[in-house]
Length: 102
Image (cartoon, rainbow, N blue to C red; front, side, top):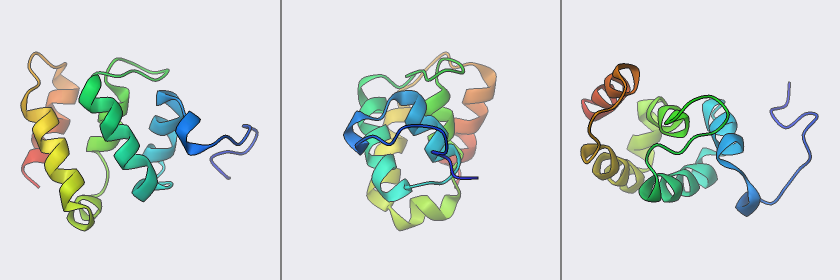
């Protein structure tokens, strides 16, 4: 099933945090969406879609490590963002730790 089935198409610049979370979680358009997501996360690392606080960060952190190898600049930027976070919920903290040891 197409991730955008039943949803109106919109320009990439008009995607919501929830749109990005869903698409990134399905590995759709990562070369285009990860830079946008990191821009959001720079301003608000705990940006929230429709699930829970930090759900965009969770989607970004759990991409295949190969994604970050291909986009090392983005990976470095994400490392900077997460290295400054404190008092994260346990589940999100574990995702950060797994990302950092990749």
